[in-house]
Length: 340
Image (cartoon, rainbow, N blue to C red; front, side, top):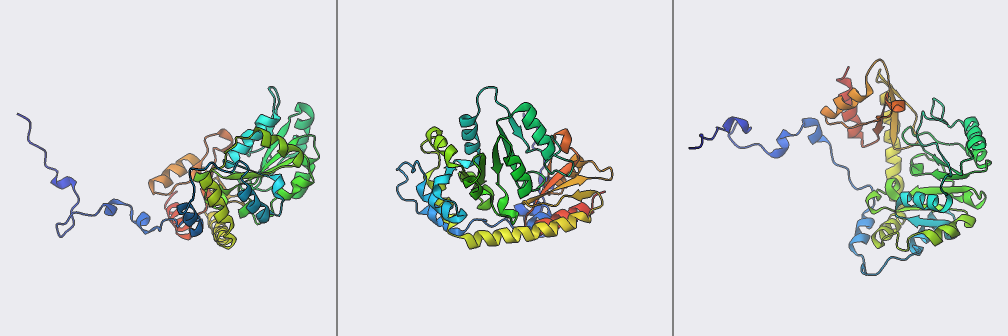
């Protein structure tokens, strides 16, 4: 005979009037007060995707409509522009077309690793030495850089472009910097490639739309090697719709940059954080005063606030905070005040 079922009456929260609580009553109060993100992309993108015609027809192998829109947006002729399934595909394509077994590359992406200085700026002198000694075939740069948000100024970039090396410049976060893209530079420098994306600019990360500016002497070979239908119909339609709404994208960017500046000032007031100036949509902070960066991330997570911590030893003492809405900043600051 089975044992009698245990009473569960005390396990179910009940309101004073005897009615069962609603599910959201279990959620932390400060999280219930946060309003969810509204779509960063204009409604016209959804409308365009909802009215797709002829989805059974293959995409245009040359993405001509998108490249024409990008030419108008950037001021660079479409002959210099190649679209891809995210910038990742273009990076892969560049490496397949340029590198042979045994070739070397110089990656300056990660800060606090050679060849960057302690303030995250590029160590150009060291880069020159490596190029002379190791003779890498190409160098990968990011401006603004992830995760510190620093930028590469014109003088530094020109100095690197004078080296006998192919320079691949990733501008995924350029919209948040207030600076001009270097896309048009490819008409002057035969050893420069500039990569861009719709993932951050127009919140189309899930549709995978990237593009790049290439010298004519390079792009012709990428056309030969690329997959024929690399940009889907939906991705091209969404990207074109986003580009038709520059005012909307600009307003979203301005709001984010304003909140980034407010967040930076508030983080500077936290005694155990040293935030670095950022030109991107995140802020890197050095965790000081004996506070453990990993534990800080874990303690904030318990309060429903998520920040980024890095496992590699060079960044073990840092955290990265993404810029959100004002109420997200407020929630972070309220939580930080209760710690340590």
